Image 1 (cartoon, rainbow, N blue to C red):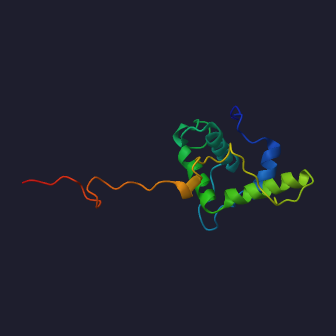
Image 2: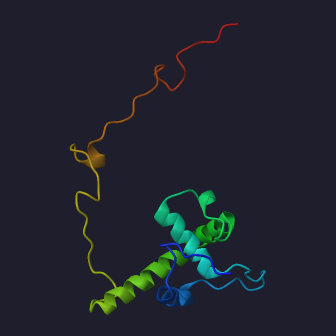
Image 3: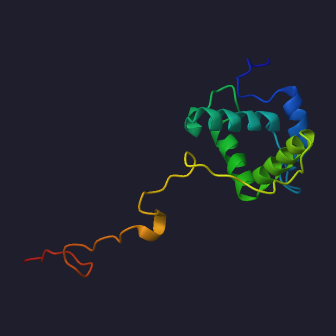
Length: 140
């Protein structure tokens, strides 16, 4: 039985673009029993909605499974490779070079202080004891 789609689910066209970029199952291990498209749908639901992993709806794969693949693909660089590949395709479709040549940051994106950022910040104060030890003594 097909489930009702969430707004964060991949469309068929999006899935066709992403499917070849998904890392294959490890050779020699257990074959994947979970639908990889549903893993991506679960990750998108979590990332877009901002809820905890444990709050994934029950009609998506178990939260632990979705989290396992999300974390694994983040650590091995798969998410970054998927992102870079898709960004390059979007840029090419727009008639631009696949790799950006520059970036921009505005004051709404990067917060700083009026003092001038990290170089002008004050050092942390030491504890009341002056040498990192507690200022009270034990009696007894």
